Structures are given as structure tokens and as C-alpha cells.
Amino acid sequence: MKILTVCGSGLGTSFMVEMNIQQLLNEMGVSGVEVDHSDLGSATSDSADVFFLAKDIAEGGASLGNVVVLDNIIDLVELRTKLTAVLQQYNLL
Image (cartoon, rainbow, N blue to C red; front, top):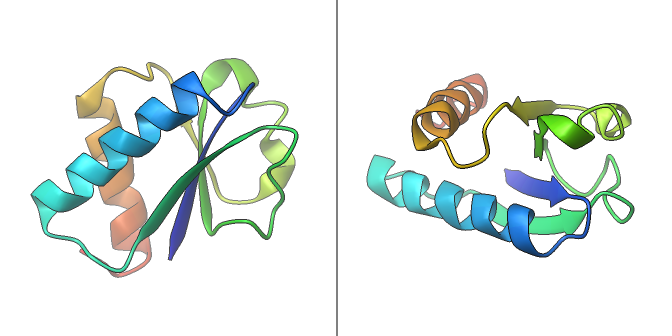
């Protein structure tokens, strides 16, 4: 399974969310999940199974497919909750 975190420029926000997801995966003991980051213009529907985006660019990423919208990109509780739901959807938890 592959998760792609996406932001407008592909540098700050998406990289931070990628690192937070990696940390949470480690804490949960989940392996076999590839996590990367990208800018919105470079992301395509076949670049990942699940896309994590901030709510300010959610409309622009709607065509990507399985999109998880983060209301607050620095809220680790929200990220853990939404990541857990994705991992359960893919039978990884």
C-alpha cells in the first residue's frame, strides 16, 4: 500500500505530514506501507492508493481517488484517527 501526502508546493506541509504518518505507523507497529510526499500538480490518481491533503487544497485533489482531508495538519490526534481508519480499510490493522 502507498500513501501520498500532498500540498501546494510539495515541500513543507506534505513533508511534515509524511514524517508524522511514518512516526504513527512505527508507533502502531504497521509495516508494508510506503509513504511519500508530492505537490498537487504532480500527483496523479495512480501515484498512490490513498492521498492525505489539507482542507485548503482538498477541492483541487478531489479527482485523485481515495482522498483523506485533514482539517488541521498539525493535529496528531486527527491524523492518527484518519490513518487508523485507512489502515483498517486496507486490513493492515
